[in-house]
Image (cartoon, rainbow, N blue to C red; front, side, top):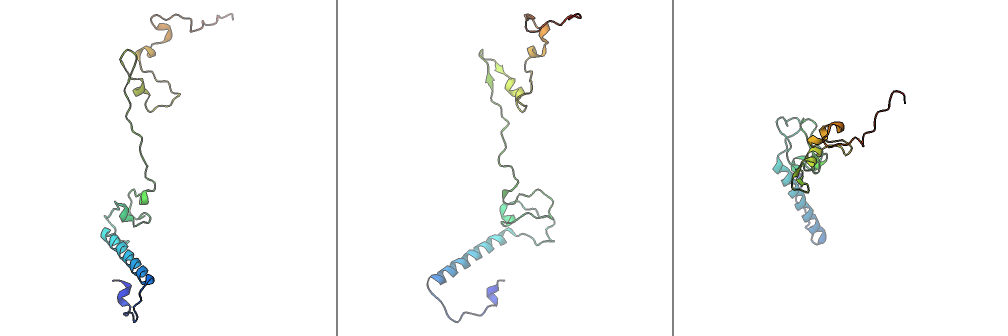
Amino acid sequence: MSFSQFLPEPKHQSSGPARAKATASAAAVTAVTAAASATEIPQQGRRKGWVPKTEADFGGGGAYPEIHVLQYPLGMGRKRSAKGNAVAKQVDGSGNISYEALARHGTRESQVVQSTFKELVPLAERVGFSGAVIPARPTAES
């Protein structure tokens, strides 16, 4: 039912740009009403089991507080785009795959990541290591 059903017929018909503008606005209102009725949003208090899923369900407005699911009216609050979690394969100079990028993925820049077995062995016990890098311990007297 629309409000125009209760009004009497007009006595005088107008023509010109004002009539064309009124007709166009009436057609736009009818189109919006048809689009809103196509989604069939239940009245408040009768929405049990109904969940808004599309932008049309929100009708250009806000969320439904009585429905306890995540709602993003007009896309507000939704994460725009997630960063991909793919890591590019890296190869060292001799053609071997370097797993350091894979081990470092998702860590801070300042965090030390030990990606090879050689890095796990203490410096003093490494084969071919000269002790020049590690200073000698001071004696008891010094």
